[in-house]
Length: 220
Image 1 (cartoon, rainbow, N blue to C red):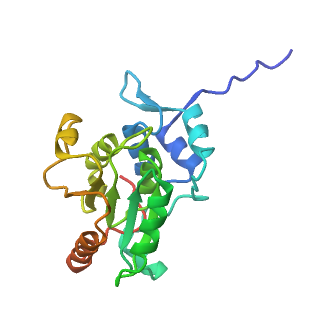
Image 2 (image 1 turned 90 degrees about the vertical axis):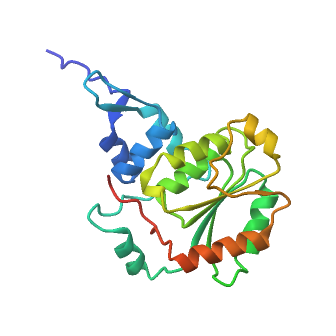
């Protein structure tokens, strides 16, 4: 008698998704809540994640995921201390590759010598934010795919990123920003061309205030 054929599930649990992606449970939750992963909840309130969206994320160009997640009982401060990394980290989200390169060159010349991370759109930024907790986020607003408005909405809804300093640098004027939903008043909105001196001053304040959030997201 032949054995019944097993049908692979088209979905997995949040923990299974985290293991497949090599990230923490909380990171998988953030990605599903923000729409980076396709997810839904069962009648019993359990989250299920589409395997197809996981495979799509794994095959996304420029996405470098870790081999395995950091130990869940290791704090962000312990992780940073173990690596010897004390420099401020800054994530720049900008769809123009020329401007991204300009950011990299300019920011690396700052006195605090920051670690500079870059993303070309909101989706890539959420991947970076899930893998690392930068001290500062510099974001454009008008981008293809997931734009800066929706990206910031997801970021502001993540309590583990609450200590991160956010600055918007955009070519949109105040009326255009307001028409598209606006930006919270506590987030500075700077105009283009990129005001590097003002950004350096803000980064200096972040260093002075000791807003170090660590490089790894702790499990929630």
